[in-house]
Each structure stands twice: as structure tokens, then as C-alpha cells.
Length: 358
Image 1 (tube, rainbow, N blue to C red):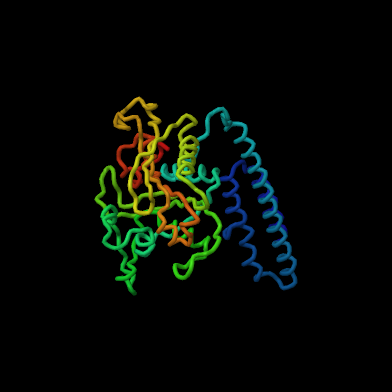
Image 2: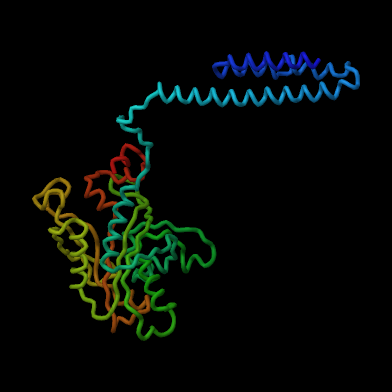
């Protein structure tokens, strides 16, 4: 039996040396280390040997198996290295070919415009503040000098939320503009709760409030039920309309170029007095007139005005001592004007053919 084991080992090692690829190596393993191999057939036959020979044959059989397993592992490593060297030699890569870049996402065009607006005002010293999208009727209308049944409410069709509680006195709404953030920002600075005397010397305030707003309107090429706004507010002593004009003129030049011109047109908003709408010289035609600016040479970009005394008082500032200005703009409108986009519905379509252009 010992002689048979020696013969099995020699034949197996000789056959292993002749294996030249992975398939041949796998076939060798099955033939010489598999369950039906000559070596494995030795173990069941050990019971027929004399007792004194069994330990010697068993020890030698295990040694042969270990030797073959080690030789197999060594040969497998040699073949692996040979295959790798052959692949490196024969499968050359042309590194001059351009790589294939994986598809990447990008910022939504409205987000890009909003970030640029916010960054511009941040450079001018305005602090960025976020306010909630679900508001009470009190903050969305009443504290902004728009009492119940005021005609100005007809300008903004509102989504009302069934929140339970005293919903008749203070209904809950999806905010129709970012202007409620003015009251939150002022009260956060002054500590005013709406009751009791006004604070004596509250600090000045200068913030912009970006966010989403909602209006119950028919969806058309020019109107959506949700869109974004950026609200601006500055409150302090001796702030005048000239400060408002200087701030917005500086913003227009930072946003649209150093030669941009703007003009103010008288308007009306319940929470500002006096109020004005602001136009910028058409940056597509340079003021010469085109179909985007309707051949007027001007594009409307925002509304503005001096903060109404009632709104200042509701925010905790004494209108006898403090003044302020406010403004609001729509990033969608500015994006549509800058890129000559004629349908606002493209922004919410999710169409990659549109979004990938930005």
C-alpha cells in the first residue's frame, strides 16, 4: 500500500506539471484529489489492512494529500501570474481615447438662479433666513396689513389646510408669498410677541428669505400652483427710499452686469407704502426692444416699497423711530427672462431634455 501511495504521488505531480491552463488544472484536481481519485480510494481500504500497518498507511496517505494540495496551490498561482502577464502584453489599452464619463445630475435652473440671488444679497450684508411654508392666516395676511375681506386677498387664491382647533379665527394656509417671513424675522430680533408695549431699542435687521409659495391658480404657460420667491427686508433708523433704490440698483448690477439700468414704477402693495415695481433694462436686447421685453426695452423683475407702519409695529418696531424697506422677486420669472423660456411648466415637468440644458 505504501508503494501504491508513492506511485500515486509521482504520477499526480508529473500530471500537474503538464497542466498549462485553468481548465487543465481543474481537471487535474478532480482526477487526483476528487472523491473518486486513486488517493481518496485508499482511505476506505485501510480497514482491510493489518492493524499494525494502518497507522503507517494512514499517516502516509495524509502526507501525500497535503503534498498534492500544496503543489496544486503553487501551480495555480504560477498559472495566474502567467495569465496576467499575457493579458498585460496582448490586451494593450489605448490611453489616448477619451473616457466615458458617467451621467451626473445638476442643480435645477431655478435653484441656480435662487442661489445666485441669495449669494448676491449675502455679499451686500443680508443674512439668509428660512421661514415655514405652512402659516396661519394671521401671519400670511392679517399682520401684513391685509385684514379679512380686504380686496387684496383676491389677488392671491389660497390653499387652506384643515388643521382643526380654532380654524375659524386663525385658519391655517399654505403661504401665498414669503412676506410672512418678515414678521417672523422681526419678532425673532425684537422678542415681541404681539402683546404689550413695543421694545425700546431693538437692533436693526437686514435679511433675505427664500422659499416656496403656493397659490390656487389654473396652471398655464405663465402660472403655476407652486413657485419660489425671495423676500428682502431691511429695518433700522433713518432708512429711506433712497436706500431701497441704491440697494436694488447695486443688486441689478451685480446680477445682470455692471451696466444694467433699472427703473421704478409706482404700484400698490398692502404691506408697503409707498410701493414700486422695479424693471431692469432688457439684458437680451440691451434696451433696443425684442419679443421678450415686448419691445419696451424693460423687464419687470420685482416689487418693493417702504415697510408699512402697521407691519413695523406688528413686528415689534416703533414706526415713529424706525423705518425699513422690503422687496420680493420670483426666481422662476428671472430664469425665464434670462434664458427665454416661454412656459413655466417646464420647470416642474422633470423632462431631462429641458433640465440638461442647464
